[in-house]
Image 1 (tube, rainbow, N blue to C red):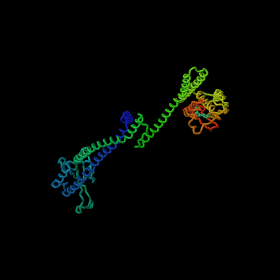
Image 2: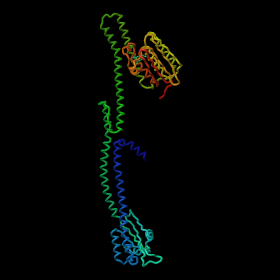
Image 3: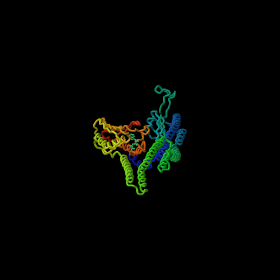
Length: 493
Ligand code: ADP
């Protein structure tokens, strides 16, 4: 049942609103105590009124019982005084009084129906033994009271068996009094309480509506502020410090906004850099071509010379585009890893063989130091990119007759590739920037030697895709050491 109600409530859209919930909670907390208080007060009134009525009647009965003994009414019912007293009592409380003697015979009935009859009810018999009884019948609306008619043994009557002061039960007075007046008062009370309650319900309804609206306002302000940011009207941080909760939401949103701004800035910067980098070779080609076109009867050698330059610029453009494509591919996701079991020593040897001719041009000696054989689960193409970029840089940024040492080592979990050169080194303040796209310590020098500024960005992405790490140590003018550490087996996330 409870589950069913929960399901229905879940489906009801309105119940999912915090405002509706607040309204219901405030309304119920305001009204439920009122209902209980009304029921409590009415019940209390009823028992108190019955108590008072009973005690009044008992007092009257006690007085009359004394008179009954004095007038010896149980033997002789002719006393008009007693008759009048009994009539008055029954009229006063709209009830009936029966006087019963010691033989359980009714000697007087104010209704005049049961006189001469014998009554053997439980209450009467218990009362004969000296116990008062009171029964309240709320359904039929009367109280039944029994009271013993007691005679106290006087000095003249006293015998050895009955000493003076002994109380003898001579008969019983059985009375039933109506509680109609109590019920009528209760009805009036109930009606008045109900009117007050309805007014209260209405007031609480309005208060709950207003309170729920006020309490929810900070959340409305948050969504308004967020939609302003979404629409692009502002980029300022949102501030709604009314509640701790709103502050937390807003803080989380602001840090998200901050992160998006950083991403957006870096995207803009990247696009600007790409455009600039791609434009430079094109501009050079245009300048070269224009200058050829502007001249007449250009000698064939000059043509050739210019064409060589144009081809070099086109090659550079091609290199930038290739690097960009490699970077974009790397950015996509880890799913692009094409893992196979590779002998890293052999792979490094192949790459060094390819790069040695370039090194030789500057009389740079490239050495491979294999400390142990490494078999690892890696993406061969990406691993080649990592090795090629690092060794190529070590050659490019080296000095005449410099050295490049590539050291391969491994433990039971990782293998390391260390590329150390004796080159120009990297200034300390640039060390943390070298992995940024298009960052170059010395732009013109890098461009001269064919750098795009993307090599290390590609390398770092490839290392991270393999769940590895890359670090650099460098001393300006002395050389640089790059160390790449990659798990031997593929780490599944
Ligand atoms: P580039 O294509 O210009 O070489 P990279 O991303 O490979 O771009 O390198 C970024 C910059 O880091 C380079 O421009 C260079 O200034 C510096 N750098 C990288 N490797 C070395 C190295 N081995 N020695 C000195 N400087 C280096």
